[in-house]
Length: 337
Ligand code: DAH
Image (tube, rainbow, N blue to C red; front, side):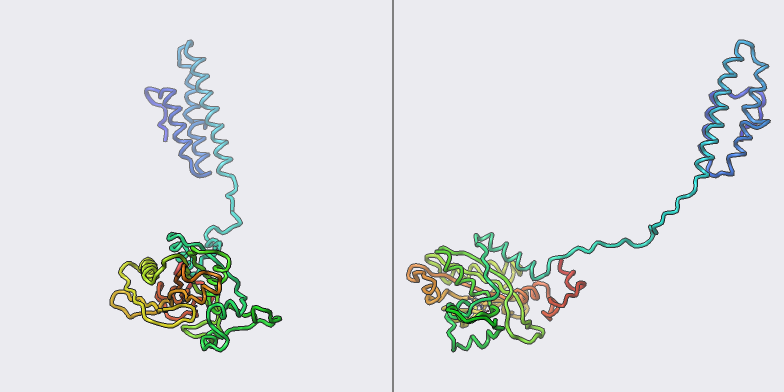
């Protein structure tokens, strides 16, 4: 509050500074009128000073008067401005900013796709190309060319859905039961050396349970070159499995049988102290398969391997029921992003 004029008068600079401080400090409408009275009222600081001008030397009067009037103008203009500011209606937004935002749902990579991408990347690093083939396949590619003749028991294990279409030279059409027919399609097209992986959907007429679904995915690897031996197969598979499951993973090959490889093996992995778990089948390319694709099996040899993507995914992420992968349960799938 400004003191009433007593004794030595405030300098004009001090008046300007006081006025500015008080005007800046105004927060509410109610403070405006008292401020006006303090400065411009009948006993206001400016009013009193203007009245006191007569006591000054005649020479000082005009300048002091002009300066006081300038300050007076400033105060009343600023009061008007603050009045307008403080009277402006408070904007009430028609949106409730306290509500949670509308989330933009972005898609994610399915864990099986992520696994296939990783495997593809790994083998690309070894110089393999990626090949693909049709999901609706001919019997000749799915079975015959892979040394699985009509009466072979493996055909029963690979029961699937057949397509109702005219039967041609290549036999009936079916939903492919494995990715191995891609080996044949690739070797028909491309002369050795061949280093390739391929992956995609495969089908079998299995009833869904914790370890089977009728549509699943496989990854196939194939190498055909001069001088390929079982040691190349074993080294490649160990390298891959230790990259995929961790450097301390133990890898074991067990003798097995597949019509299109000779010799054949099944591959198991074991983490620290855990159980052995089967992850893939493999073997050296059967000479009959190479010859069927027009490849000189005396000059070239090769190996192949095949694995189930869902199984790799379950082992990698540690869950037990593979139906979870096709459940469409976003909360479940999101964990693996
Ligand atoms: N095609 C086989 C299956 O579906 C998996 C397989 C085994 C693929 C051995 C291969 C292989 O390439 O060498 O059961």
